[in-house]
Length: 518
Image 1 (cartoon, one colour):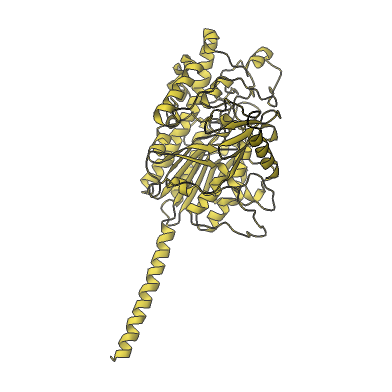
Image 2 (tube, rainbow, N blue to C red):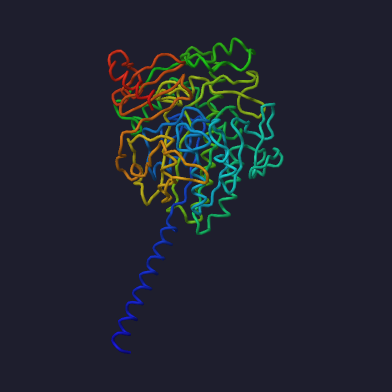
C-alpha cells in the first residue's frame, strides 16, 4: 500500500471514530436525561410534614429531604386551581391562545408520561393542557371528591381513566375498601412498572388529593395518632416552631406569629344547619378553654388529618420502592411541594358524624390549620405567608448535595422551566398553531446545585385580587378581603407582624405601581 493510500485510510478511520464518538455521546446524553417524579400535596401546611417541623410520621418525604435539598422559601398560588394552572403552564395567567403544557414537551422529547391524581384548573387553561390529552397514561378526577369509594353522600364526582369516564366500581384497587390515596398510587405504580425498564426516561406526575377535606382516613392510620393531639393546638404549634428552629427550617431570629381566627369574609358556611357550631367554627380559642369533650373531638379531627398525610407518605414510599428496585434512583429527580397552605374552611356537611369514615364530610378547624402553617399568618386563599408559602423538596444525587437548605426564592411557575431545563429541552417559539408567551418563571436548576439564582423577578400569589400578594426582593405587599394593601419586609419580618404601609410610603406606592403595571 503506497503512502497516499495509507494516509487516506488513516483519515477515514479517524472520521469514523469521531462520528462514532459523537453518536455515542448523543446516546449517552439521552440515556442520562433524568427520570422525573413530581408529587403534589393538597392543603398541607408548611410545617405539616416531618422534615419541616411536624410530629406526623413522614419517613419517605423525610428521606427525600435528607438525601436532597429543602427550600425555605417556595411560593404557590394559595389555592388548588390557580396553583395547578400556573404549574402546568409556567404562567401566572394566560389564555387558550398562548398556554402550553410542559408534559407535552416531555412527551414529544421521548419521555413516557404518567399522571394519576387530582386535576383542577382555572378557566383560562386550555383543554389541550389538561392531563388526559397530554399524558400517555392518566387517571384523574376534578377538584374535591371523597376518599372512600364508592362515596357515602351526594357530592361524588366522576373519575376518568385514560380520558374516559368510569364508575367507582370500575376503579382497580389493591386494597379494599377502596381509598383514594391508595388507588391513585395503584395506577401510578402499575404504569410505572410498564415503562421503568425502558431506555426512554419517564415523567410521573402524582398530584394527591390528601389532605384536602373531607377528613376521611383508614382506621388503622387514625389509631396511630389518636390521643397525640390532646396536648392541644397551642402546645403543638409551639413544639413545631421549636423543632423548625432546631433543625434549621427557620432562621433563628424568626418570630412565631400569634394564633388567628379565619378572617376570610368571602368563605361562608355551606349551610344553615348547626348555627351555633358554625358561628364558633372560624374562631380561635385557647385550648385550655375547651371542655374535655371538645378536646376529645378536636383530638380526633387532627388525628384524622395526620392519618391522611401519613397514608400519602406511605404511598410515596411505594413509588420510591419501585424506582429503587429498578435501579433508577441515581438518575431520577424527585420533587415535592403542596398547592397551598392549610385550609380552615367550613364546608362541613353534618357535625353529628365525626371525621374519619366514609359517612363523614368534615373540615379542619382553623386553629389546627394555624398549626399547619406554623410559624406564618393566615391560611389557604390568603396571599400572606400562611396561605402562599409551601415546603419544597428536591432529590437528585448527580446535582444536589445531601441534607441541604436553600434560601433562594422559588415559585410554582418555576416548575415548568426547571423541568424542561433538567430534560435539556428548549421552550418553543411556536408549538403547533400557538405562539407561546414567554414563561413567567425561571429554572431552579442553579439553586438545586447550591448556586444563586440570577435576576430580580417578582412573585405573585393569593387566590384572587381580594387576597393578592406581590413580592419584589425583600418587600411584599399583600391584602385580604379587598382591604388596603399591607407592606412587609420579609427579610427582617418573615412572619408579617409589622405592617410598614405608613412608615415606608415610597416603597409601598412603588410596589403597588409595579404590580398594577405588570
